[in-house]
Figure 1 (cartoon, one colour):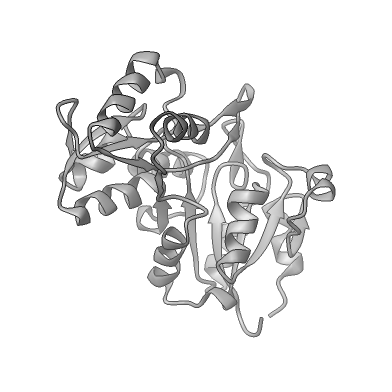
Figure 2: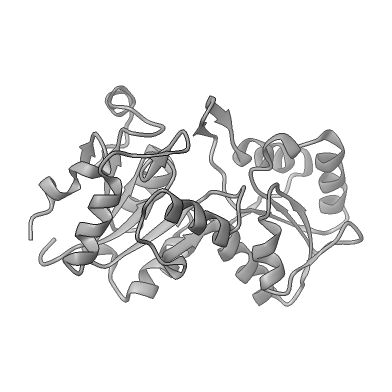
Length: 258
């Protein structure tokens, strides 16, 4: 990699964890902006709409513009809009529906064109999953906003939407169309917005599979931070080898060679 790299930066586990900002993270973002590095923030978070996530980051002291956030719900809503079939049954929680409403998507439980599943948290119910199961059997497409296995919540590790997407795949025999990380389509959208190439980009994340392997398969370098989900012990056991392992994003300045 020659010249200044660009960055795709994960959010939960990288900028904050346990609903607290990572020490030095805000200062690192300020450093990248002051020195004119290109960067975007990418997230599989599907429990909040983009505007709510932006407000949270601002509250934590991050100098981030809403348009710099590329989230799985926004990408999914835009994908659905492009299909021209706008009727969706959403298995989500919080205010994620606002990202879909903004794109003109119709939320419905009457003959939906798509079943869209994210991390619905405590709002996952047997009734909702069974309804989704039947809609898919009747012809609805299955769309997974993310397929993460688990995430680090304020209460510890917690099941993520991928487990429930896998249940619907198993029961219906239909493969879900993945929109979020590590989808190559999702990563290409973020790179295109910066007008940069994968070979000149570093992805920074806390998940070996979703962040690091996904980035490396797309032609980028992958830096793992151990402030979130995966730790150094996980790296030693994994066949996925990051290009760098950092204690946190606060250490990024020490490994940027420009």
